[in-house]
Length: 281
Image 1: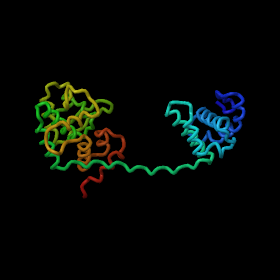
Image 2 (image 1 turned 90 degrees about the vertical axis):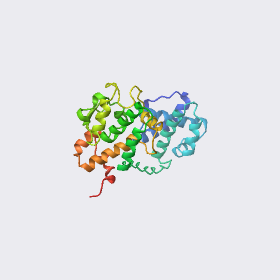
Image 3 (image 1 turned 120 degrees about the vertical axis):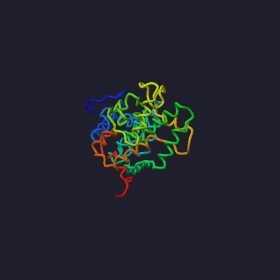
Image 4 (image 1 turned 30 degrees about the vertical axis):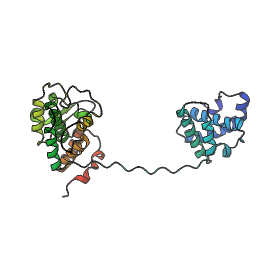
């Protein structure tokens, strides 16, 4: 589409009155805005039409594209859709910035990155083992054991962890086959392999998930289980168990390409943030 070919749904006389200024403005700004030419042309045409033909403003950029004029015009748009008004205002404000009639606001200061959770201490891990054994039923004990063995032993995030079955545990609990969107084989930390093997061997249904078998997966499945559990004040989170596993792997000197694969991440940037937890040499 060329701006010269644009014909809005306006009375012919009204459009002819504002067409020159609309064409001039669109030509000046369109190549500098992150919107399509039809979107910019339509927004500018309707705004200029209202300002000149309805509100009586002079057809000058300095009058039409002030911040207060844009705000008032958008509020009076004959539409009930907030999203439509929001998009119109965004296009017009960016147009005003490009014309120099609206002061461009400075960018916001980037928010600081979230600080990673600290790994569990040795004492914390002992308490987590006690928490698993303190559950109120055999079924809950089994799920709790699977949760900490897969979290601390293989560093699995929630979605991966909740899909693991007894069939996915290798001989001796030494590795876990992860399926889903990021399939891979994850070596299990030697200290956790026997516990994971025990959980797999005692599963009543090898094809069911080790954690919460028979329960439909949802993003908060681990959180809900932990919140409703019995036990001590310290309780597991998959994120903090994963951090504990990553820090242990980094401390052990696991080759980075192997760790990236096992962790299911593609960039070392995802692991650098945990360097602060490594023991000083």
